[in-house]
Length: 113
Image 1: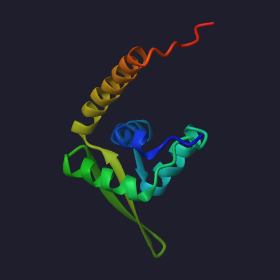
Image 2 (image 1 turned 90 degrees about the horizontal axis):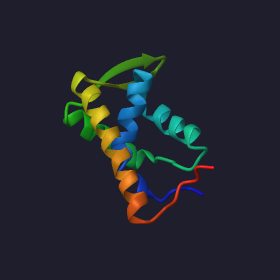
Image 3 (image 1 turned 180 degrees about the vertical axis):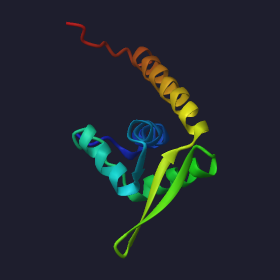
Image 4 (image 1 turned 90 degrees about the vertical axis):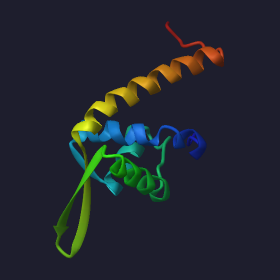
């Protein structure tokens, strides 16, 4: 099952921040592939969703960019700023709390067997 873009939309920035925290620096395609890999293809991020989020994170001062030339290609790497490192912890904590609230709200029982 692939999750709907509606579900992913509200968590995309947090996903990107956490990946960057774990991997130091990544380029866009690498981010999309890593998410697919980690979620066993359940979350597939399109470029149309990813790049506006990356640009927004950059505008907010949470990520910085670095351009590298690889042969004739230009690759733009994204990494966390100092503010981004702090904000990542906050966003991950907020999302975890939100998921717990949703479990309660929707009366979802987790298996503890």
